[in-house]
View 1 (tube, rainbow, N blue to C red):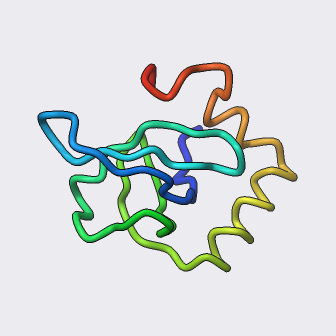
View 2 (cartoon, rainbow, N blue to C red):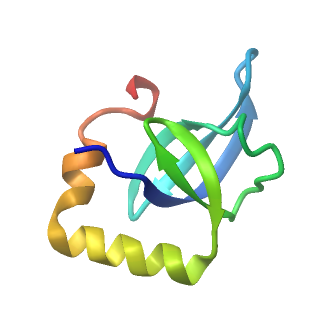
Length: 88
């Protein structure tokens, strides 16, 4: 399974090649490429698919989706919380 997961941007930086960020998915933080959405800012919510931010999302929709995914147990399955942000 490979879902688009909503998360909140907590940090933005340039890794020397592209615009990157750290995104919080209900307590699981992962490194994400932000190149497709250069106007995203810290605090914005985005849907992430295979390590890329693909669209902006409003906070209410993001929280509802995260709660649903959490209740279904798919967050841990999709995000592998035991891996460091840099290993994704």
